[in-house]
Image (cartoon, rainbow, N blue to C red):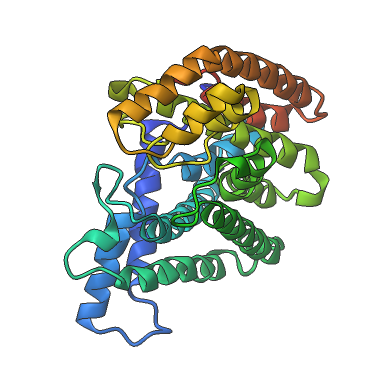
Length: 350
């Protein structure tokens, strides 16, 4: 998530991958544990399968944000390495949540390949693998940041955001308990809580929080930054929900299934909010049904309610508000960080 001004080059991306190789090598030789050949091979394979396979946007955003906070000064090799280490901690964090999330959702694929737990001989060992992924983070932080004045703050921010993310996941899961499909629960307030805690904190705020701490800043001095990034996270998820319905599969890389899956999507929340009694009956009878006819009826209802127009109005409004918030910040460097995030997601099509 980088603007052109602070973009991470291909060379830097390769250097980022090189740091992953270093960290993996250290973790599978961690002297705190008595390794066997089988256990070392298992962890190495598990890491390669789950950690570096995505777009790496969150991890690279740490480097980009730290770079922008330096206001054009070239980073030293040591700074670039440490920012990369923090970026990989964010990617490890993401991998930990995804491994467990796929199990809870009974998902079959992730990043174009079978979910880790779906692989032969893995199964529920993946639960423990997720715990190992999470516990790698403090091992990495201890090795590289123990002597830094912000070390405890790094530990705190990962711990607190883990709590918030897990709590958001809990709200999402208990809202859609098996056999308890109740659209009346799907309110904008509930939706915002799920998105705020399940996605916004770790996807948008955590990378920048890491960069701010490394730059010597106090997080409590940057509430405006946190609020803006969390709002961007909400906007990002609403875009995802919109694209699940209206995005071209060849562009977004998947066929949307939020309707069939009875997801607490922004689209259905707005539909419940806007529809009349007759439309509400159609929605209640067809949402969450896994057949083409029901999906078509729900999409037709979305069109009748002009949810495309509702989304476009929301997108325009939130962009103006975020831009005003960013430009009100006293630091040009912080403005640059926030603008880099916003420019990357505004009017995205995938």
